[in-house]
Length: 436
Image (cartoon, rainbow, N blue to C red; front, side, top):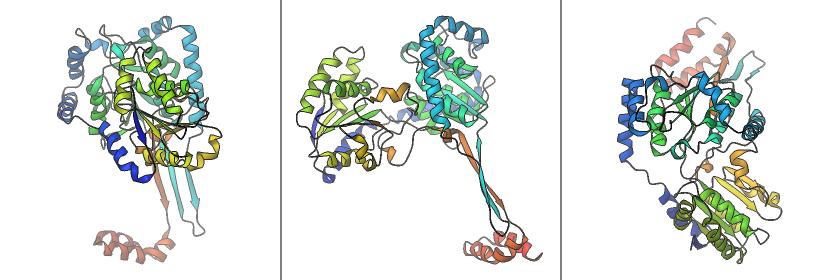
């Protein structure tokens, strides 16, 4: 039967549960060396490395001319995509763009009475690379991920955005990727995948210009490549396995709760789906629904493995104890499936995204509503946030002081410098004191 049964009475129970959940984070250190070699080959060989790896893993007869997607391929993609699907994609882009426009930060500065000017300049990075997984053989492209990564970069004001995605066996990209890119106004698209694609975005090749920030999900090779490039380029985040926590009472519909748990379980055998409830009758009903619904899913085998290994029905004594569990878990997705969820919102300290009430299932946020679905996982919501416009900007401090400022404060600044053993710093300021 899917899911563990856990009784949670309070903080003292958390360490053992945490230890269990952290077993999902088990990186294969053998991948580190493989990825390091891949990145080095891309850095030294450029396009040829991409061609070699693509021929080996994706498309046996891949040629250099297929690396960059041509304009005629973009236009042909529209003919292969249903008009109704394009309309849905357009509407999702509008919703997501409208939400992210509210995140834009303005440059600012203040002028003090003595004429000192201090401020902050907020500017977009010059160039962004977006990685879009192709899904199963390129037939289930993650177009929602492209939208979620591209829109905040565009709203931030990034002028150059390149998309890269692994080709199908025939060397082409799924038309939904190409059509969605056009809906976003992106025309620079490349066919390449895995760690070598990330290396190309970071270092550049003969065909692909290097990027300042790289964003987008991927497998362990993609995630490891992004991790190894931290410090050379900006990245969005290194996401772990997906997760959902559902805090529910006796008003929750067990059919809906099970469906929401399965929406995460089908992602990955390492995904965690956790129901926390103080209603003793809800857990058994949800378990039965999980069994029934999983049997009907195309990815039911993946979902069942996820539930068996990382699913749980957590029984608590009351809502406050359930909220304590949630704050310890700091889940990627949190659904508040009980009456008057707004009254408890202030108690929730840590979650990537919060879905309020019985009619706000997690997939609404994944695809359509507006907030970004790139969220912190495995407890990192304690200190990190969703992908946003800020991911694609940088902040520069602005400082203006005059001779009077130097005269009034130069001695103090020099003293602080000498306390740190930095004589040249002190003299830099004192050299200006002689002019006062």
